Every structure is written in structure tokens, then in C-alpha cells.
Amino acid sequence: MYEFIRGEVSALTPAHVVLETPGGVGYYLHISLQTYSSIAEQKQIRLYTHFIVREDTQLLFGFYDPIERALFRLLIGVSGVGGNTARMVLSTFSAQELQVIIATGKADILKSVKGLGIKTAQKIIVELKDKVGAIGSSDAVEAALSAGGTTPIFDEALAALTMLGFTKAASEKVLRQIHREEPGAAVEDLVRIALKRL
Image 1 (tube, rainbow, N blue to C red):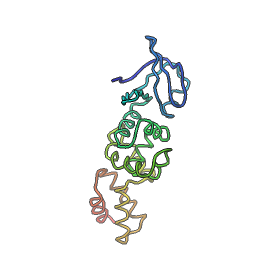
Image 2: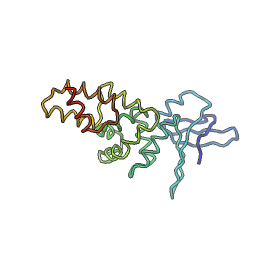
Image 3: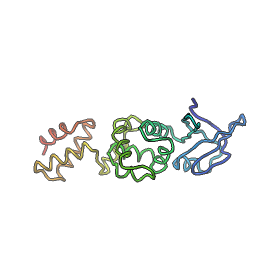
Image 4: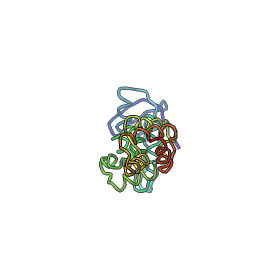
């Protein structure tokens, strides 16, 4: 319904902001800590919005970054994740951190969010793993791999190669090279190509 609201900050807390538009209307928007930090001392801002209508209430959420809003929309699309839980997730992790956590299947890190159990964390990863790469830059996942992070597919291929008797260090080096060349490769493909190079 509302794409964004531009206005003057008339009230700001870590959980909400009130934006007064030039027409004199004040909008109460629920925000994450990431958005709160981005607003900082600014007086005039534009926030991207998401409007939730339920039987008992209407909630307007505001986001400084459209990528954060896109992630919020994906999160609330997961059964059992409401607006406040999604906001808590986005208060705990930056948009890029969350993309990497989901893409690399780190449910143990995701469950550290207050009020989020391991089952819900796993459900978020299963349902959103293939969707987060389409938001903004998929460079986040590549950066995680370059920095030593892994994906579940990478881990599975590495386990298969070490079970076949190859050293972990050599296998990991070859798999990272293959992953850069063929980012969408399945486990079987990674193993098959790696066997030719090891």
C-alpha cells in the first residue's frame, strides 16, 4: 500500500520512529536496530515501508534500506514468523549477515535471536536458502566462501572427498576453486569435478 514515507523525524527510539510528512501527518513506524542506527542524527529521512493488517491491529514497519525490507518480507512469509520476530532478526543481524547465515545454513547462529527456537531457525533456512541470493547482491555468499565460510553443499562435498581418503586441506582448496567457477553446482557435480583435479 505504501512504498515509502519521507518526512521529518519527530520521535525516535530503538524500536520505533515517528515521521511527520509535509502535510502534517505523523506516521508511527516500527523499526529494527539496523534502521535506528542508520537514521542516527538525521532530521529528514525516507523509509521504505511494509504495512501489516491483522484482525486486531494494523502495523506499519519502516526500513532504511530496501534490501532489509525485502528480507523482512521473506521472513514473515515463513510460517510461525511474525512481524516482531522478523524485526528482532533484523535487529540482531545486518541484511548482509542474514543473507550469509541463511545461504550457508547456520541455524545455530540464527537461533541466537531472542525468541527464535532451533526449529524455526531451521525452517527459515530451508524455506529461504534459495531465495536470499535474489535479493540485492549475491556477492554476500561469495564473500562468505572467500573468507572461509561454507555452504551445506560445500560441506557435503568436502565430507565425501575426505571419506574417499583425500586430505581436508587439498579438498577444500579444490572445492573453493570449483565453486567460484560453477557457483550453482550440485554436490555430485562438485565431487565429480574435484576427483578429476585431486
